[in-house]
Length: 153
Image 1 (tube, rainbow, N blue to C red):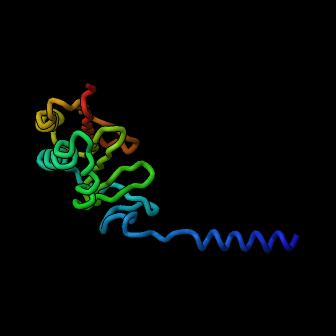
Image 2 (cartoon, rainbow, N blue to C red):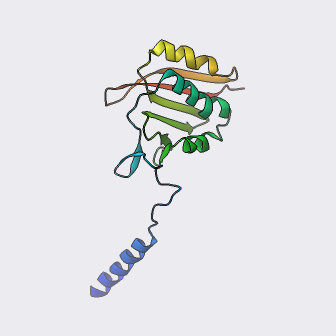
Image 3 (cartoon, helix red, strand yellow):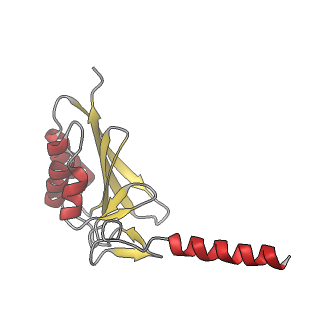
């Protein structure tokens, strides 16, 4: 029995030594909001102009494969949320995700829905599908989501 406890203690110590410490690649960007060490979005709603700029830079200009989206997001201060593959902005209430061949941005804005739609939809190239609309989450806040993906051939 004591021998088993000794072996168990050695295994626990070995496993503890194998745990990696956070590195700069996985750590949230400086100033990023965190909840229990996980990146979360900031609280500021974004303007129509900012939504247009982000959608253009992160999704439209990176279409159709979105291979540069993550690098641009990180350069703009977005922090990764490792479980969903989403990147959150530290001060603005928005996120970007590239998954399953599409680029999606979800954001809070005080702007009128129609103004947002009229500003964002025309940016989408003809070879891309687009979905835009309001989103409601448990917080009760209204958000907007826009997602683009290549049209099937």
